[in-house]
Length: 493
Ligand code: UGA
Image (tube, rainbow, N blue to C red):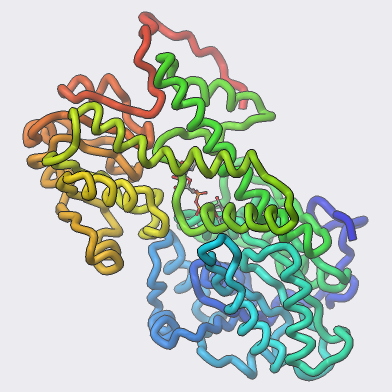
């Protein structure tokens, strides 16, 4: 099946014929209560559906019953409180699975060392769901976990086998990838750019379009803590075959990675030529074909998704002997960026052995406590291995770091001033809001030497230099400065 509908649910697209138009509320089971499953469950419950979140982890389920999410995700706990009457948590859920209209599979799909995706949680979940696909009522099993092309077919086979059904008349498998960013997952779920539904049967697309109707039609009163963005219209609805939907998810992340890789490559050249990459990015981004987003140069990306998904895509390529040089290059550039921060320190301090370096931030990006593949960890490890003393301050994730990496010999500071105390250099690793207006004069006063590596190009170089710091950004321009007023007329968005 090719892409058959783009836009809101409207005449000519999906007619929602197989769904009772009066049915506003669906019974939904979300299998897997990680950050994607929990956010999806909470948002769908807020939109009026009856949700059961199923997870094998008893501690997690007990905590969620007490209203504790266990993750730092702005707005999620508030949303769960608002939707409390519509959401339940369980480790078993057999009856709920039996009665569900839609089952959303949102279990983890970690990477194997060779980049392949580990699908055992998907298999186990499919087996459990299949065993409970009793009765003749039609229901949809939607795979939200990020899975390689072809997994939808595997899930269908597993469901058939476990349910003992020969045909697939009473259930359909769909791919329904997520595009949630950590730190703004609730916002991304309620006000997405697009909803992608990959199916084999029209009835499955109609059921999922009806499930998402409140979002597609924006038929809900926004929660006070997550208002509808100004100028937001309606999300596009993209329907396709299952394999295409699976590929859309990987291609989206791979493209974002490529954009960041590209601007970091240009930043490297700017370091030599003296051009300012932030101005370059701003100017090229004003071309609507290029766009402003994901052109921030610096120490590069981390997190649980980009590394895993690019490895999976490269692995998929090699399975088909289909080389992906652009993506390979982008991943390689990213690996180098982390080391560049250390190289800049080495150069400025004439070697880092015996020096004390303070890391401003540990999380892979602001507004999350997630440390998975965080550049801070690689930078800290490298500095420690080179004989430096490493201190760190992060407003949210220091306890996580202590617990998860007990062997990492980082000294944790209580605030930015105590971080700066005795440091030869600071590295801004995570651009938390509070780091964009640092008390630089007070910090400079307690430092040994004053070098600041701005790993996110988040600070104003003259402001930093004014306090006696050597400022080192990524491609921030070392050449001639333009004196005088820069005339910026009107900017067309
Ligand atoms: C990413 C995608 O943005 C989501 O659409 C997707 O759903 C998600 O992965 C996923 O696959 O589940 P996320 O990893 O939460 O979301 O974070 P991003 O906001 O995309 O940032 C990723 C990394 O890129 C961060 O380390 C960030 O600092 C870095 N980044 C971002 C840059 O270095 N430069 C930029 O211009 C933008």
